[in-house]
Length: 343
Image (cartoon, rainbow, N blue to C red; front, side, top):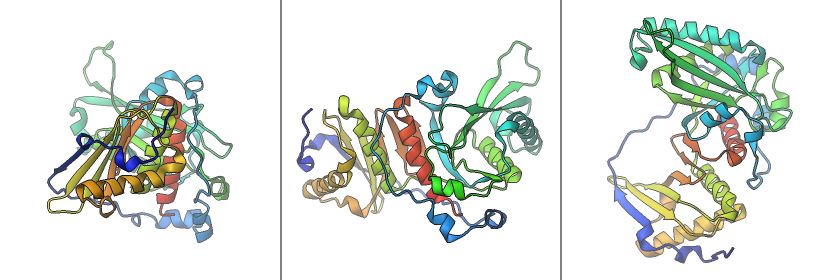
């Protein structure tokens, strides 16, 4: 397969879209709220924090988890767009108690619904059923804890007995190739599942997080995917396409202006980007935009990347479209979650 070395001259002008959009406010969750108890239990120290750092990052590889993961669970994980969060280690979480956790969370949601916290989902005349299940086959090392899937179904209070329940919310917690030094250093009463994804009503998401925080003395925070991590995801996904070339690569930047300027780059070529070429590719792309459009991309921020294998946004929204490269993607996101944790 032929590779093009001079990337800054390959982009046709009709593949670049520049337009303005109205300015919107963004809010960041404070990392400091609600952390005092977790700090003391974990015995936080700079040395423990430093162990979260990965010293190496490998190129993407195929992992056919379809042979190991339940097809129904895999179908849910793939194709769904998830809102990502980081989660601090869970105190006294037990994988053997998932049925009990389902009953407890169901009762917690019912109590919240009586207070009007979950009414917007289906209304007052509904009941909710919660299920916890293991996602076996995802772990990649002895230190990784088994992934957990949480699902919430609703049913009308006076529905017929044969009427099926309706899925209204899904979420999962996972740790894929977490830093082994950090995981081994955690106290034995803690389970580390730092990456959390959810899809469904915001009211239910808030209730689920609140229950986890009260039950396991943990803390949730929005996992924004940084400019650098978005570049790595782009490189991982396009490198995976070595056998078929880049398909539908799209990157969106926002540049500081009044109003903000949005710049979109698309690529539909037959070449691919080696993971080692990320820096040179991005530098060439920035030079191309400056030379032809007098736009300095380094002054703005990369907000979104998408390919045929998945998409990710700075806001923490992510979708994986191919299970063969799910493990590599979740490995990078696990690293991001571990580094984002305030403790």
